Length: 218
Image (cartoon, rainbow, N blue to C red; front, side, top):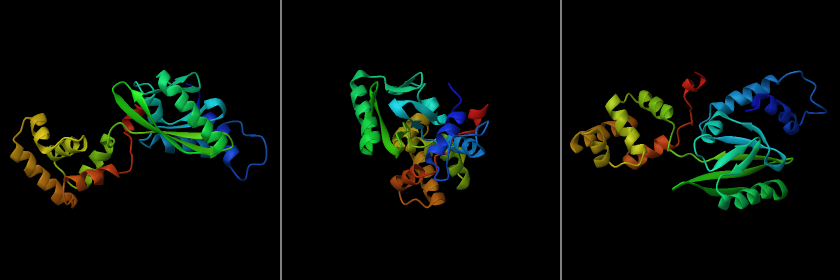
């Protein structure tokens, strides 16, 4: 893929009130490098599009998502829908963002699953596309949450199961332990986190900052 930091540096002056003329720097501005790095630390796929759905920048999460059977794909630098039935809806949403400054939420096909995206106008023919998450929270966020509250490895496994939508019985079956054991672990997790019930516990995890793993740099 093209150098997204350079593309972001090129696009950045369009949005700066202080910009007064053509970009004269010989390389990417430090602020563009910091913005690119900042976006890569967020566990939501984000794509900055210019005219005709041309990609200007994609953060790490978006680049990973678009190579893993996502309903959106890149054809060169053009953002397209994989399913023909979604093509017109995507094009209409992008056109509405550019020409009518309308925000849209779309649900696209991904095999048997559905993935939501947000299409957000940024002005001056620029559009932000935010990819919906396909799991409740990035594992590193859950791990840091567990470490913060002093959860044991077994309790963290239970927490992961609850965040995946499993009930205590299903968690017990998944890890081949007794239901009473899982219930005891859930009670311990609730005591350590101050959660009133499982729903409250899952909600605490759902609103964690979307942190991605540093291992992606390897």
